Picture 1 (cartoon, each protein chain N blue to C red):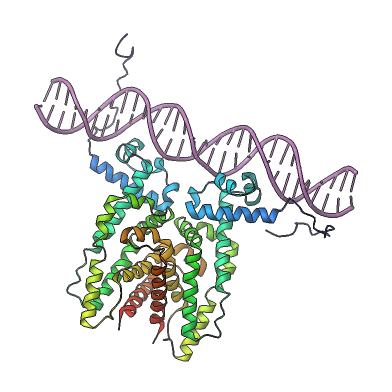
Picture 2 (cartoon, each protein chain N blue to C red; picture 1 turned 30 degrees about the vertical axis):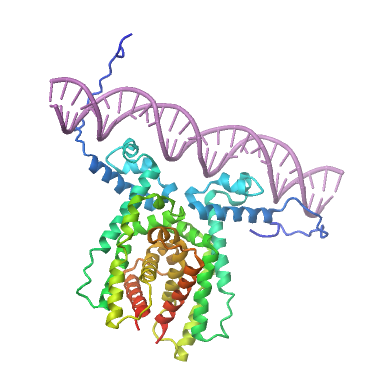
Length: 222
Length: 222
DNA sequence: GCGATAATGTACGAAACAGTTAGTTTGTCA
DNA sequence: TGACAAACTAACTGTTTCGTACATTATCGC
């Protein structure tokens, strides 16, 4: 996990001649390959040999760094959550009106899911497994706390300004936003098949984005 | 050369009650067991031997009736969809006002997902596989046509009566309803873990049901 | 009551797969 | 430079698991 050796010693070789041993890069390489494989096939469907083939390294290294298939899976899941949370916190909402700020939160959530379908797929897989791997993660406990702070802030500002009605729970709001954004990605294949609507078409997605924003804004409006 | 083995082993039906052939019941027994297994573990995670153990019959029968693991999986998926569509069409909406009728559609969709979590889990699994099995199903093509007729009917009635605004697409409405109802089941484990809100508690679910109905009604209202 | 065929039981083969053994190469620092 | 640890490789192993071969039993039309 750490970028430094376990025993903190002076390092002499500050000139950085090219090294072929590059553990951090190897780890990242493995996690990237594993993310694609687990997202595509789920935990049971993913193949360690397949992941190894996609990397520049070997299967042995996967066990060297991650211990087991499940260890690797948990790492992949943690990094996926870390990434979306990091993106969420990067929004600059202070300068926007409550309504515009909320719209911006919804829009960026919508677009994130669209741009990173692997995230939704991993979350689906984790829920198939009843969240038992995520429950083991220490890291997740730290991330969650601030996850809805931005949303709470904008909602409370909207209530004070009179734009939003009182008495709503920001967490419920977050759940509704997530639900609407998640579905477009998570269920796009079955939905496209059953209703003959191509869920990847830009026109359809633009309409869904608009409808999603409108749905949320109407819900909080007076 | 004798036509029979030297010792013609005649296996008697030792201690067993006489067999009664009941293929239809056997099929249903297998599908029921397979539904639980596939919903719990996905397509790759499910074990044919495990399914066989859960039935009153043997693995041999699974292959006899369904040909392969994937054949059985598709059958399970088809029956799950047939079941929810059947439930949807059983609503009697004519006697309700447009707003009450729409609320009733949302409520019953919400409650169906809650009562049949296996459905959402199977749909998640199928989407992990990019809908390739569902796409093969002949049966699904027939079911879909009427799937949103009730919703379209009530929406158009609401527009005529002035209760709902014009210009909305019933399929978009259906998508929003599905998204909000699906999420409570599909993502309940990860959501509960991250936000420390028990998504199976009756109080939480009652609130979600109310919020979901309200969200949809506010969206269609003038 | 007989022959055809549908249904079922048992045991096993072959392939796939997670994880390991046994060893080699590379980098650091005394 | 040499000792030691970290980084890495290739081939192997034991088990799991889908699917099948072969044998047997029930049902039904005639």
